[in-house]
Length: 183
Image (tube, rainbow, N blue to C red; front, side, top):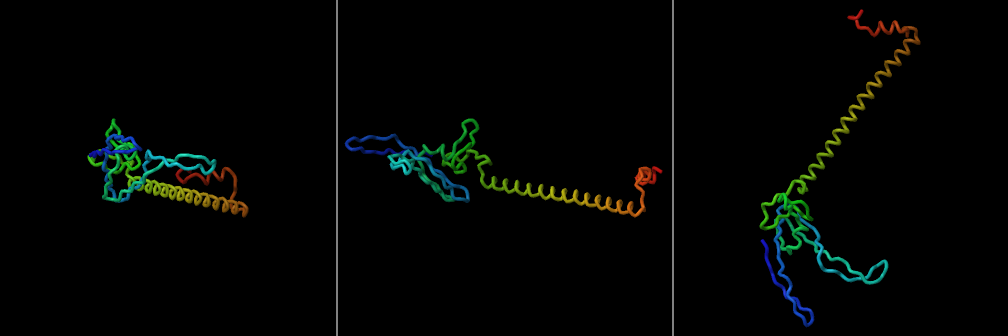
């Protein structure tokens, strides 16, 4: 839905007619307030703090759209707010791509622009990392437990050898390692 207005601008003794301005209405159908800044054509004159001298600064227009509300903006900002791909007909970028332009309600906004889904995906990733870390810690603890058991067996074996209760000969070790069914 585009609205047009014709404006008259007066510069001293000259009167000029500007192009007709087209407007678009943007709605915020989410549960969060949409806040973004649009770069305008206006320039602010000033002085450079560091080097002195005259300079110009860009002027931004702050736009705030509360949930359920809409705002009328010049159509020249449409692609800055939400750019739609001509090839796919889907939203591909923008400062606030989840806003709905009146008259283009059927345009698909991919899930990558759904900030709630992005937050949930990030949370899921964090949970998966925590689970992996927990599982890695369990595996490491199990490995340490096995090493400790092996160390204790070795210490007991050394103690028995010192006490003369066991022989460390390879023949006896082979006999000990054989299962009763092998004998």
